[in-house]
Image (cartoon, rainbow, N blue to C red; front, side, top):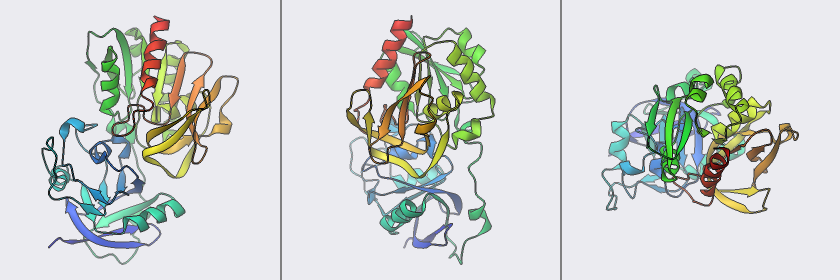
Length: 359
C-alpha cells in the first residue's frame, strides 16, 4: 500500500494523496504544465528549478524513461505532482520507470490528488508556494510562507565552457542560463560549432573568440534578479558589438532588461506545448512550447529601438522582440520545442541566415 502524502498550499488548501518517487518533505513554487506528452523533457528542463510541477494530463509515465530525450542530465524541479503514474510503461525506447527515476534523483512525488482542482486554484489565485509532506499537516507553516527561489541561474548554468561540433561552419557563443540541450542540437544540426559559456562569462572573453553569432538560452527564476548584476552589463557590451544575437525565453527577458524595458510576473505563467503565438510581421499564428512565469511588458518597449514581434493570442502578452539597432531578436517561447510542436523551428534558420549575412 502506498504511503499517504499531502500538498499544503500557501492559501491553506490541503490535498491528500500518495507518495511516489523520493519520500520526504519539500517546499517549492507550485506551478502547472498542460503538456500531454514530454514529461521527461519537462522534468529535465532547468527552467523548473525551485518549483513543484503539476501535470494537468491525468496519466504520466506511460512511455517510461528515455535518457535520449532528456534536456539536462538530471531534474531541476523540487517536486512532481500527477493524477496517476504508470507502473508498467510500454515503449521500445524505454529504459526505466518514472517512479525509480524520481527516486534516483531525489525528486519527491505526489499522486492521486485532484490535479484539476489544484490547477483551477492556481489559475484563479496565481502561482503560490506549496509543500509536499508525509506528515499530516495542520496548516500553513513559515517555510511555505517564506520560500523564495534563489540563485537559480547560478545553480543551473555550466561551471566551465565547452564546445560541441568544433568543426562547424558557424561559430556560435551560447550563454547558459539553464539551457535545454535541444537548443544545442538544433544549432549543430544547422552546421554550427557551439561553445557554451557560463552565465557570468565576461563579454570581452566571448568577443575575443570572434563568434559569428551569440545565443542566449532559457533559464529559471525571476529575470529581474539579474538587473543589477554583471550579466546585464556584459550583455550590453555584446549588443554594442553588432553581432547577430538570438534570445530564447529567459534570453528574451534579459535582452529586454539590457535595453531598459520592463518585466512583469504573470499570474500563473505559460507552461505547456499548446500556446498560440502570433507573428505581428506576417499575421500568422504558431502553436508553441512554453515554460515561463515572467514576460516583457509590451508597453515598455521603446519603439525607436525595437518592435514587438510575437504576442500570445490567449492573453496578449509579449512573446518576442525584434531590435532595430543590430541584427538582434528574441522570442519568449521555445522554437527548439522538445517536447512540443515544431512550428517555429524556422527561427533557427533565421539566426543562421543572420550570421551568414554578417560574415
